[in-house]
Amino acid sequence: MAPTMGPTMGQTTDPTTGQKMGPKMGLSRREIQVLHGLADGCSYKQIALRLELAPDTITSYRKSLYRKLQVSSRSEAIALCQQSGLLPPATPPPPDD
Image: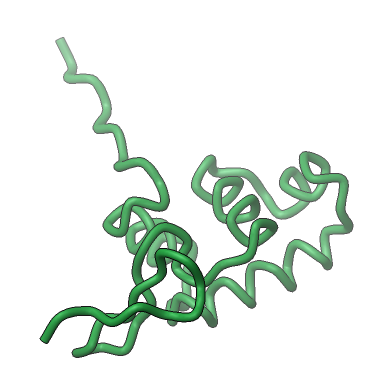
């Protein structure tokens, strides 16, 4: 069964899992900005400073994006978004010489 188009332009839903896929995976612009901060390894306070928002607001955005992605951790969110193409793939560390 092929994925079906969702209400957001370019968004699809996996028919087997019901999970949103596609360019934005149903996330808002701010949630994507928070996700990028999480992927960069920033703390909530650092993300708040970067986006000029309160740390509690970042926590709210994080909870919302975890709920939408159906994950429970930073690493799960990052891995899922890398697999879907929303985030670039992880770069492996350089080999030791």
